[in-house]
Image (cartoon, rainbow, N blue to C red; front, top):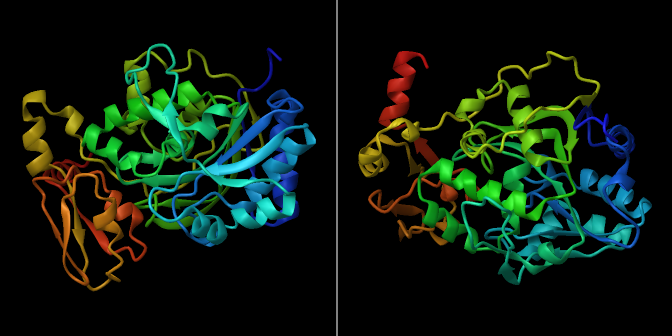
Length: 379
């Protein structure tokens, strides 16, 4: 296995069942087959991105055909798969039904279970955070097959393999971490990296057939990328995909975290697949982040309050569901009327959880002074 490719990238033009199964087979075979990652009798958590109760065509969640194809391969290898995630706000039963996961589970005769019951995660050596709690189901599974969705992210630029494992943190505890970490994206990336290294998924398979660009992860624009990708190392996969999307690695908080901590892969291995060697997706709309990490530390608080971008409500689009108020970790939002939200920007930590969960895309984005300066300078 020493000359085995470390990552694989295959084109897949649709979610038609036969095509997904065929391309999934080629993807896994190029990496040694599912038998390389799963042994007979093992319990295997299939961890998709189930951010919200959204239909597959919105490209917010991992597509059920990708999960189904992965589950079939796990079963063929003798493993016992189950589908699990911990949505931040919507009830798990509605998420399972709307995303198609319940249908996959029923067809294959496997469980579809909420990741609940938080327990301490044994942290990998060199972790920044020494106490993180994740779902017992994730921790006790023999193996994890990580099934993220290829999406942009308003706070972290991109959400892919590493960040998808943050979904093993149980429900509203995610909001608590947002509040603890605050606006420091590099520290938040440290947390994501700590969880990914500590859970150590056996394999990450990226659903990039349909993804999201713009102000993801919940209210960007669906885009067909036509890609399935996989690696045993979610960090390597994320960094390779960042480059494929035409983004600068130095702008990616996850890359900066790994670089600062000397965790970057020492030498990227070879890749398998059918993409041209110099392939890059054209004109992907990736959110530009406020570069507060460039400011002196003494200006950190000032930057958060006055220089950074901030969420704004669009009352005309608001449907009055109150999800933004409920999810806000800083308790900076209050409802003044059915569709009028007041935002206390002194409390707001610019995590954009409100924008992420809004089902009507009624939370917009006011560009901060730093981004306006960078635009003026052409950077």
